[in-house]
Length: 219
Length: 219
Image (tube, rainbow over all chains, first blue to last red; front, side, top):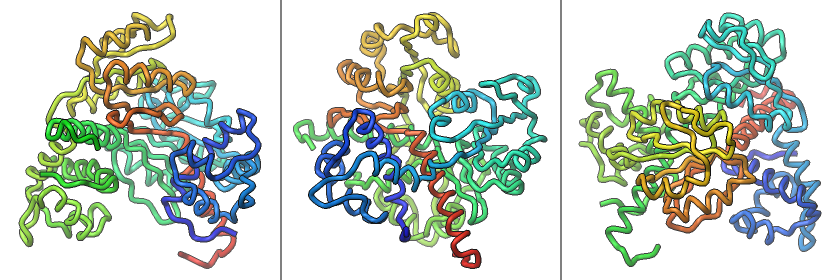
């Protein structure tokens, strides 16, 4: 059913899902691509094109059924099934992610957390015990884990990713400040926080300069 | 000096900066676009094109001076000056970001943190006291704050962003699960963690399906 889909379209799907979820919560039953376009600041033709990748989802001139579209995109995103997730690194970020209940609501079940620091072993985070790194591979194999979240410093991240792959992990959510080299059948989604902060810094900086250079130019 | 630069190029700059920083730490003095290309999995012609936006940075056939390039890109990213940063929300994520020392090293000074929860007021995070939200606007005006980090739930985020803008903030690093509507002169960089996790879920899911549909098709 699905054709080859570009990274750009995939990148936009979670945002559609989020907006449709809000519409659904507000009791909206139908929405036209024009209305959705205004709400999301995306052109209506972009929306129609994106949805066409997945068979359309709606009747022209009649608008989309919000509930149906929400469920369909959720299914495409793999949110109609449960995922078992482990977190590597029980530092501040690891704990923040473990405590983020919203993921659980979407079927991402926080199942285990591992740390190199002995002082943390046995401590519980949302009822889940922090375990030593040495137990990670067996835990993955025994608990049907499909997603690993890497929140450790970059120095250990590459070697740990190799161990994850060895144990059968096919999806890594990488917060370590390093690009991972993994086999083709392993998916990596990077959240490089510094890169993101630097982009913001660039944009703010650039705007400042433009303003100084041409104070009356409002673009 | 700088021409109009596309979002795609800007998006790549922090990654160049990161790789060059590592090369510098390893004592590498010069690197050709071919070598950098192999390292970063980006084509050499892409690298040359990107750098041409900023005046080139190197002699053809001779390679780039790593230190010079690192410093130049850092300057473009606005990392040659200090930024004063406040965090809104002293929950797990706010604390994780406050404790992330690497930002400080790059000139992003953690200056204040605010929360709606009275129980947290007065508590110190890296020596900085958690303050009530009511003090936020005065604090921004009195302490020359240029970046605000939003780590609160989406319900309060839109109203809080308006207050930030009112107080003069021009750069918002937004972790709240909502798109902010701000004036054109305010820069927003979103880190939508759920969107990121859903993309990973999509890719992993899709790969599974392909494998089942065509177990011998290795593309």
